[in-house]
Image 1 (tube, rainbow, N blue to C red):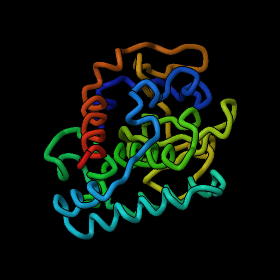
Image 2 (image 1 turned 120 degrees about the vertical axis):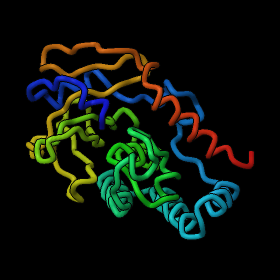
Image 3 (image 1 turned 90 degrees about the vertical axis):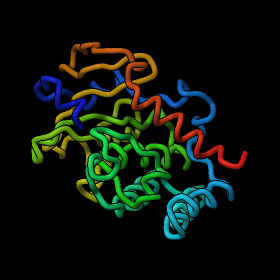
Length: 231
């Protein structure tokens, strides 16, 4: 995650503070992404043509996961989605895409059955939104992993706005409260307007506009194109 590595990381910031400043708000990205992932026979055919039969089957399993979500407790949705994507192999963007930093869509992740840390977090985010989890409860958050001594990305789930978040992380299948993840230091996140650096409980440092995040814009466009196949 080179974009974070270039920053001077602050001391330990408050997980409670991060969501007050920043979130990824799908409503700001347009109605095409507001409901999460969309599946179609044409999409499945495109997956098979582009990546092979097993890739199509993985997307079919994802569709079944989403379709089975009505009536489930949100805790069950978190567990199922976290487990589903954590089965995907980890590899670096350089190895997977021959790029320094590439944000793969959930369909690309399942196509090659491999992911970098941001791919896990973003794929879990969109799947949970598709399963009816409120986007206001989800935060895609950049952190520093003290164990790995490098930048990392996780998905944080807030049962309520004032609650301590639960962390969905490809480094572990256990979904734990942020307070128990002493190996992670929250750094920054972004929304449709601004990019912020988490400094401490009392203040945040604005470091740039979200429209400068070309990778996020490119990701949105690719995901919408993939879901629009055959339309």
